Length: 212
Figure (cartoon, rainbow, N blue to C red):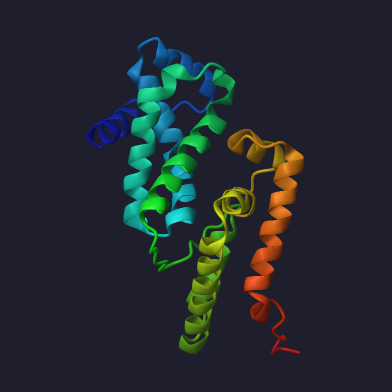
């Protein structure tokens, strides 16, 4: 963990160059430039954290597991042959760490569903929640909890596709590169996942609109 934090500090001190492709940074790191890895970490740590949080639904766990991901990346990046696929490789490492953690935490307790669901929807949802009256806020919290539990109950092969597609807003090709599935398989699993979610939340989906 200290190594990862030191790398992040190094990146902040050196400044970040968004113009440098990931592929170039990976090459520089493999050739011995630790500052290049620090920049990769600084560039992607928030995305990894958000993805991890969607799976474990606990801030401290997500932070610790994000550290674990980058330790594994630091140790294994030398093995990445196609450096243009770094982002997909990083997502795959994130999923592997999340899956390992969730297997150990069989009796998971979801306390909060992230409001930031990708695509900029988080800030809008947060403002709506904050403007609610207390009874409305309690109802919204109950809905979030129901949704979180429904995601948790999805079999892993559907959950990973659902989270990457719905929360991270990745297209079928990107999800396929991360999970090793072809786009058609991603589309099929996402269809099944959505169907399962709708069934689990049928009373919410079919609830009448009180404004009508």
